[in-house]
Image (cartoon, rainbow over all chains, first blue to last red):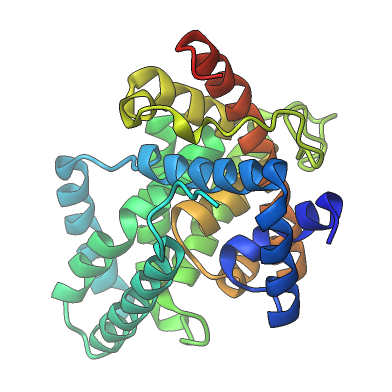
Length: 79
Length: 217
């Protein structure tokens, strides 16, 4: 497998969605290619950081008020 | 070969998604039976995810709150029309996505189409290949790092940002994301791949420079 081919299947490799034979040849390429190891490591780290830092949440006050409104909408919908 | 993530991170995410789907099914059955408490549980289960999607698309907290509220109110007023073919969560995400996109279209000038982005549309050839995972963990936890990551996500084009948020931040499956955005599963995979590479490239610039300053490169 070449570096270009590895780049093309990087996402599927990370998600474990590759057919077994491609998974094996990607793993073999990674054993000898430092650039692709760096690409894989830093892509995984990017995803972990995005998840870690992307945890925006609604305030408890907003959510409590929303629940009351949703219950009223539900009552009107099922009537 | 050195890896920089705990193993099975993605598998854990998938298992989390399965549990959410089961909770979703139970809430749906209770809503059909007229159980008022299920409304609150539905809001607790899905409101933060809907909020994050709207916030990523619109970039405005107040507007994102409006999208969440409209989504739930519209959905629950017409809950009898929900046929249960998709999960309740997928249905709500689809309503929220359409709602956010409508607002986004109103904001953009009429001459700019929704797919003609002025933002990053996906780098496919990496230029920075230094492995910055060697940086100490505290460097990744700083407020500056957080800002870099959030800015990098906001610079993705809208189609890439929507897929990335739903798939990698909310942990939804490829099939669910395809349903929500009304695109094929292969389109989801292509966009996700481009989004991941583009984000990695942007962060690589920042963290490589950081590693140089610390004498690690």
